[in-house]
Length: 73
Image (tube, rainbow, N blue to C red; front, top):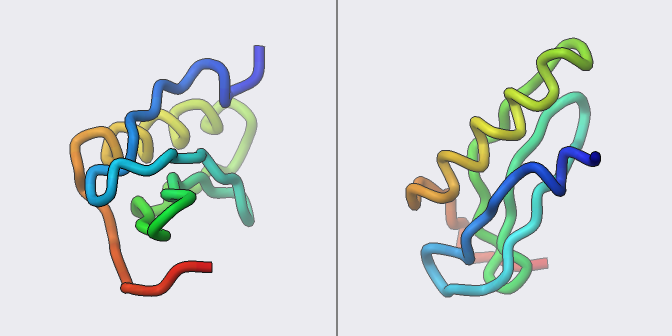
């Protein structure tokens, strides 16, 4: 099973848009596909820490702790 299938993400707490779990440079973060809000990134050093990093950033996102810069892609 993929990590993306094990993580439950809520819609964006700011605009209620769809969210996506992203992996970049050995870290995970969650991003809104509409407004560009992001969670803080959580890094991992090996495969054993990978799921924990994804769960931690999803937990921040799901509780509404997001970063909004006012810019979207």
